[in-house]
Length: 321
Image 1 (spheres, helix red, strand yellow):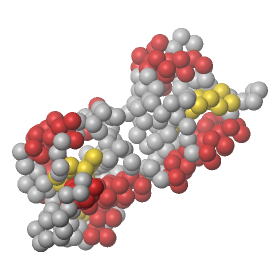
Image 2: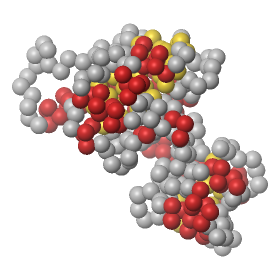
Image 3: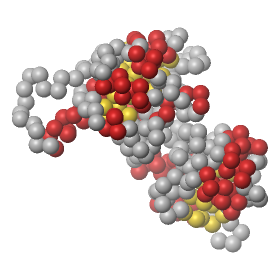
Image 4: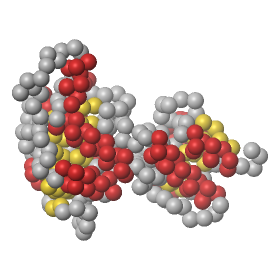
């Protein structure tokens, strides 16, 4: 291992990825699945030439500033989202940052459609009823939900994942698609109308899926006013970042019956989940499963490895941010 760059892997990755990394780097893996703290990040910046962080590993401006003699030269993030890394502070410290776009697109879109069906058809409520031994047999008005075929899908954020969601909904369920995006989208991939404002989409759709990047610009983008624009029978699905949705406002809307339901794969204060939301039947709550398949997580890890190997070989980065 002498001479190999020292690499910290913040949380263990699929075995095929670990085996590849260990052929090129002197690898240390943290013995926990918990995110790194800012203090751990500072120590890592001082000790390792390369770091492979992931969701929640807090590389703040303070963490970079506190590193007295940083050895790190690259952060190869495992994941497309990187709002847990202060990229401006990394650049100022001369540290490259990469991510893994593309690898997560289809898996995340699949989870979005799963949540659409679970929320609209009240599948979570039905499953809990069966497990609790409360099901007394079929009857014509039991757990009536929203039939999504032919309904209007609203996509907030028409990037790679937003397009993949729209494609599945339109081609699979004949849904009409409207969307909001900060910039003009010339080709959304399926017949779709770009509406001028967020509230226009919230008001027009039967199901709204949030697929925007995380960060300060999108924090609480879905607030009380946006929720108030929704139709009473409409459902909200969030597969982006938890703090894009004001969960207190969402809980209030659900408690008052102002919207039909919601499905969340991400949460504002992960891993804590709102107690108000947990008490409600008409909300589906998943533990951030967007990319949880062996193939996808391996592909993400291999993409991070590609970036690391390119960097230390003096080649252009594949996915710089």
